[in-house]
Structures are given as C-alpha cells and as structure tokens.
Length: 158
Image 1 (cartoon, rainbow, N blue to C red):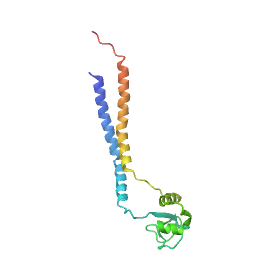
Image 2 (cartoon, helix red, strand yellow):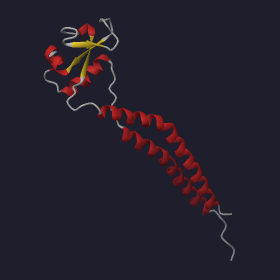
Image 3 (tube, rainbow, N blue to C red):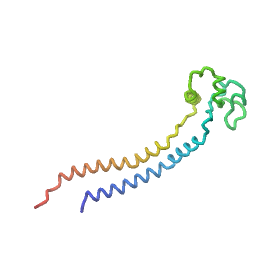
Image 4 (tube, one colour):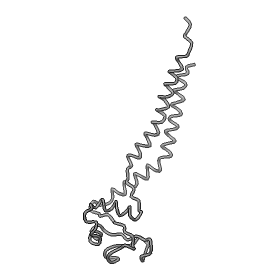
C-alpha cells in the first residue's frame, strides 16, 4: 500500500469538495456584485449624481432645487432631500472647493448613507483564491509532514 498516493488522493477529493462548497456558498455574493456592476454600467455617462442632505438642512425650494425620498410627500424629521449636483453647488457654496466625487463621498458620509463600491472581479478572484488556496496550503504542509516522517521509516532490507 502506498501511503503517499493515498494521502494525495484524499487531499484531492477533500480539496475539490472544499472548493465546490466555497464557490456554492459564495455564488450569491458574486452574482450580486456582477448585478450591481451591470446596473452601474447602464447609467448614462452624462448622468449626474444625486446628493443627499438632511431635510432639516435643506436650502432652496422643494421640486425646484431638491426632491424628497421616494414615497415621501412632505419633509419629516430624519428624511433626506436629494439635490442634483448643479443645484447643490448653487445652494451650498461652502463646497465650491471640492470636486464632484469628494462632495458625493462627504455628503453621503454626513447623512449616514453608505456608498458601496462595486468590485465584482475582486470578489470573484478572492473567492477562487480562498477556495483553492486553503487546499494548496494543506497540500504543502501535509507533503512536508509526509516527507519528514518518511525519514523515520526502516531502511529496506537488501
């Protein structure tokens, strides 16, 4: 009986089962990232970002300068008012020295609305790396142990 061959086959089966399980469990998250990426790709290049501001700090006229949250008909405490970037710059001159991207990042953070950057390929490659990296580490460590313990075997009789 060849122990090395048996251990390698056991590693191969367990490694493939582990990789399949990780990929199965990570499928929804990967699919969600690619779906978000597709939605972002459909936004026209000339579309401008909506800037959230707490309605208690809103400036300008409702319907002209800003809109309310979807489904909200009047300003209530804790609701958000949404500005187009041009209207936002007009009504909030203190942000004049910031770029559009910096304004988006700052205002979303100020009102507590999270911005989730979409990285579908990073998610996919990270999942694949974990799914096949862990079994590879076990192969290397197991191979080192087999090599070390094979030094304790009896020499073959001649």
